[in-house]
Image 1 (cartoon, rainbow, N blue to C red):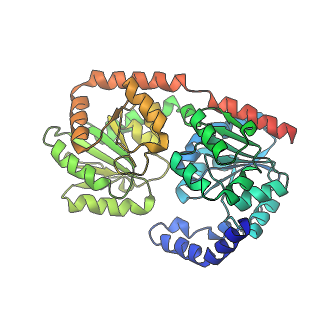
Image 2: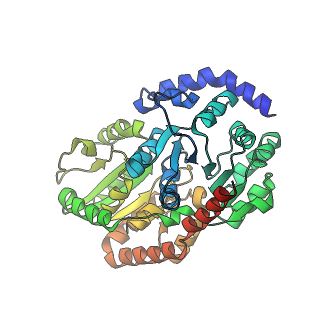
Length: 422
């Protein structure tokens, strides 16, 4: 079945490249370095690397502490980090700078993957969460490169989809040396789709080990005073198309009860920055873009964060947060970043990407889940009026984070064992 998959992939390459070019009209970064998608590089790279793949922003942020720990434990080794998106690339550069090499993950075609592996000669392949690429997995096996999937998660929906293509999935999973899952439920699902139980271990969620420097928290507080003095700042972060207009409507209603309210919007995708600004202005909301570096006025309604790699800082600048991708059925984004920045958290009904975490924090009272616009308004007003409740939420969430940390060290030990055996 892999041969059929590969043939179809080859046939689709012109359309895939055309789509990449088309996306470049809104997000020019997609057009840059496009040759890397075919494992063609403009400069020479070191081989014999420890290779980590993180699809985009969320996976990159989660894996950074592990990469830093691996660098400490393997000081003479060189590291390669691949991502799929430009936003993921920006995160890698902002956080790890020149301590790693970065290229985009090449397309899953045998000739392309072979060239990629020949150039970088990975000592180990570390894949974040659930990326299953049949040719990549096969080529790693052929080259005797130990391949691992870490922080692995698999929803029931994804498991059902994988079960429909066993001829692709089972041979791919047979090439895997280790699958480190977030939960027992994830382990069960990976075994159900064809992973060998002996190679699957439950290690927990790397996202709990997010590291925040106290300097960053203090910097956020300082900027808040400088930029947003006298304003009650509500951040809606990692928003998707169809969400901002909902929040703009809520803002207009809340403004009557909270005159000093300021809406800080962080769109998930950079190509939507201008679109979100236009949406706000169409609703007669006075808008300021972060990149303009202008001071906001007392009449500013919306502050659009159109910069990259600042999400933690922006969370720390807010009085209350709403995690995007959850008011519409995207699945929700990482709630542990605002938690680490000591910002009270609200999210919507659609949190299936981190269902267990969402359920746990709501039960503890560490965060609030709102099912509709009315509940969002009620909770924003209540939290605005009750600073003590906001403080209790932050303290409870902080303890929840501490109770679930340690996955980074556990995962590093498993990977080091594989590196030694190889």
